[in-house]
Length: 392
Image (cartoon, rainbow, N blue to C red; front, top):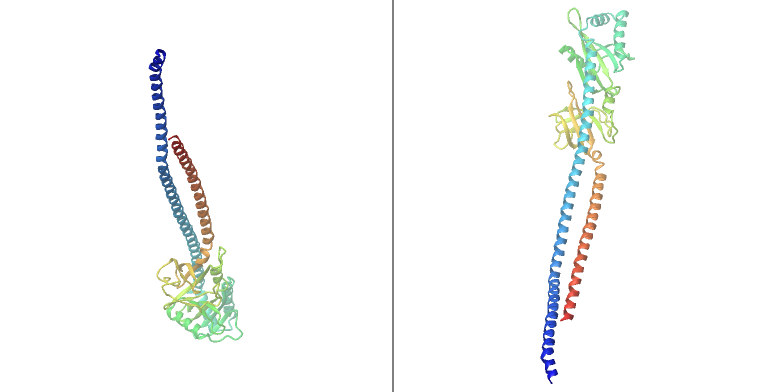
């Protein structure tokens, strides 16, 4: 009994202490596992919130990039459109300037030709001698020699001398039946003699042929007593040189053309044939309205935008021809200027669509990768919760 009592006395307390220690240790392990499980369980909702926040952040960044790119693309499109307009304006301005200078020089050259005869003592003496004696072959030959030199310039269709009674006395080329001048020519000749000055008779139609001509009338006076002898008429066909200046386009274009006009009341009268209306010369009249070219033609010069005689929207450079009643309108259709805009806009749209698709794909991949990480954490938390439940 002593041994047994000693066994119970010594070993039972030891086993009891060991059991208490083992139970305490197991409880600590269970408590630690429970804490970890509770942390993972508590963390899972936070991860869901973070996932949604990250998705919103990605959407915000994508929106900023898209808006920025769209703004830049719109600005680039507007700049391209502006460049097309600036290029067209520069082209029209250069063409109008060159043609205006050419017309001014042409007009000055014609007046210089007329000045060769005006107040020319020798020509006046030969004219007076021939008018007094039509059989004076020497005077006639000398006069024809002067006219032939002028005719050689190929600017004049016909040159003829009228006496003080407006009767044709000498011409090159000569008519089969020379006679009195037409009423319109007679009026201009009388005005030239009365004013003692050269008259540049602007675009007009010949009554007999309805052909368009210009004429320069030079009054001839006696070198002795300044008595009126007659008038030298230099008749010009604008088809020889003047119209080609206007019709020549240095750059290829499907709609560009140049109008030469003069003001008659509240209308602009076209003086030359046009690309889309060949019979426009001295026929086409355009009202000076607010939205029509040339609405401000006679108030200044520069680039304008409006409707032309076809009621088509155009860009036009309008300017006066110095020293004349003429105005130039060099124009081109707005549709031709902006012809490349649709293709350029399509390129911008395709670029935007490509960028947006690439950005969406990239953002979705990033978000998906992040979501997979969150899913793994949630799965681990769920497994820990189950494990903790089993341990309990």
